[in-house]
Length: 181
Image (cartoon, rainbow, N blue to C red):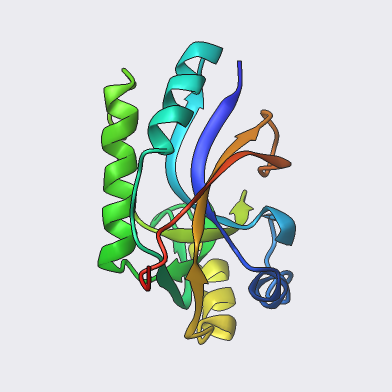
């Protein structure tokens, strides 16, 4: 039973720049640069026929290419920080692609995502870092960006249950439409 999610890949040059931010925070488990991505929809553990149906439905998504912009750093977990991330600007094209995938996955019989979509690139998972330590880390590195990159496709990833994420395997890739076509 594969654990699936859809995402945008992060270009290698940007992943390298983000990886230079690693270090200097107690309790941080840093994500390997090759595992950076922008999740569109976590699907979870599904049986083969459901996975196949989702993959076929995703192939019918026709959306134009767009650019993604990264413009800063932040953390999730107000009272008890649990992760560090790079902020992805919630561009309308990105939000429309994510919303369409949400509809496709619900039509396949999965429940709706319970959380509001917040596009980001997870940099680290935190265990034991205080608010003050996390705020200090962000203050030292919070001026990251802005940087943009073109998105020409989205992917269906599978993963195995692990601590810290990864390794991720691309099960399928779906090209976005060339707007010049």
